Image (cartoon, rainbow, N blue to C red; front, side, top):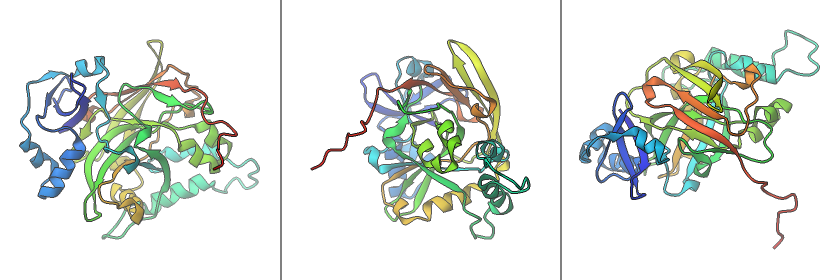
Length: 334
């Protein structure tokens, strides 16, 4: 089942169920957010699908109408964006190490057989990234992106900071979670995401990875609840002035990953600060496909389009530069 969040014609938040073909949606009467749905399911001890039966469905309406009036919202939000963590894991997919390794080659690598740090992490994942018999596998690369304020809605611009050196898409699966009153993470489901990053900054030195990830991101339009297929094939493309300048298929799902999803979840939620009741977590699971690896330089105004058929309509976001931000002497002494 696919759920969307949007603003109704009165500008009020609402939730709808998408049709299988993604052409129509039905409003869920009395439900104003997927966060509220999750809280109701947790309180009643039921799953999301069962809890949805409490909300009558309205008449079908065209999904295109939401797109035309820019009414779509991210599929999961917290009432207070500061209580939404946006994080991710890298080097998790088959083939993802090749691009990263090219970016991280040591300038003076005398021994050609020596592995870069990226390849070492990737090999660890290949050899031990899947949990077994209730025991965790090796931990993956992990990064922090920001809070809920950095999440762009489907169709809305991804604001690139004025100091950015690159505007790079990363098509990924995203896990959507709410922490219950007892501190247990509850997964609502998954969404398609664009883990927007600055690969030029990262290429300067792999220790700049943390800086390169502090960028906006997007996910949706739909939240998929229920079982996730083991193997998924999507397409990522870049459009410029109505023309496609780059496109490529990408593979995801556990069958195409060197880490199990449970292992990635464990190594995020093992930290107690991520188990605060009521918080939302949006966790990106990594990718193996980047336009940057093919020498594409994204320009302002370009649009990213990321589509996995099992997740309904494509996620589309243009790139827009922001005005000059924080000044070098912008800190005020008190």
